Image: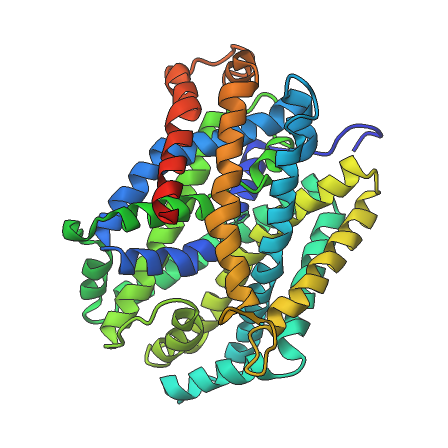
Length: 448
Ligand code: PHE
């Protein structure tokens, strides 16, 4: 890199892979199948796809535009683009805070995936039933060091990747591991579909039951779109700031949304076909991956290898998402407080591990970090996904629609009028009116 020149993604594909790395995460593997299963299967999928098209893609584009226009991360970008400078910068602080909080529990779960790669390689699940495997999960949480140890390992991996910079760190890591993850997911999906009676699982997952579409389903679909696409945390603003000025942002955003959705669908098909095939009612939530799936793999020919592959893909998905959240905070320290890159990474790591320690401990049976009957872990999860992310998204949409100059939006979208985007006005009005109204209506409904 030339001295004084800002680091950035080296290629269009690299930018897409890194952004897809942020988007594809635990949200696709845990959250999506659960949401779909609980909210009417194929009916949920249809609502999800509609919201993805109408709100998800424009929101992703909005964040990327803010980032690329300024070449800055979220706080600096908002300050630069708001007419009276600094007025909007405080919204960036909401994003940075959200990213720190999200990291504190996301690193906990990612740590579990590493423990489970180890457990599957050591063949610890062999010949065990659901009850025994469930006990393993509980014992793991209650052990003194293991959960925090793996959380530290996750943070260390992230810190090493980030210390290498954007092109040589984030981009290279994503270009290497994302394709591996795609291959693993396809292999797992095919393996599941080859199991007897797998079609019942596919039907459960994909056949629409329209009677189940309620306000709650729509709300859940919106929350899932935000979570899954990494919207509202400044990650896409930050990654957008590394994208080459000549790249067509609307294409990149569309590709990332397609990759994210296809991965979620493949994982859903994998899990439900396998579960139905062995006659296990797919338990939802974390229990699904950490308790039920090992049992299913036990009953599958070649299950030992497929189990290892599954946890590896889970770890890759989680770590590439963590990298993007970290980068938001690192860039904040770098640009706003003028720390060096390595110092910013160190401070972010310590901050995340400090709060993360209490979050991880809150899951122990003897935990004292329980508020109103809910663990710190649960509370942070709900607060970031249901409050900070939609509010962050709302603020950014309002900013672009009502405060930032319209020309900036069109200029970035069309790469300085060099490409034609037929729907640019439509997109602008969706961001200005539709997105804020939809988010506010959903919020009011939720609180009432
Ligand atoms: N999109 C990630 C997932 O699906 C989560 C995430 C949210 C990542 C916000 C970055 C920022 O798991």
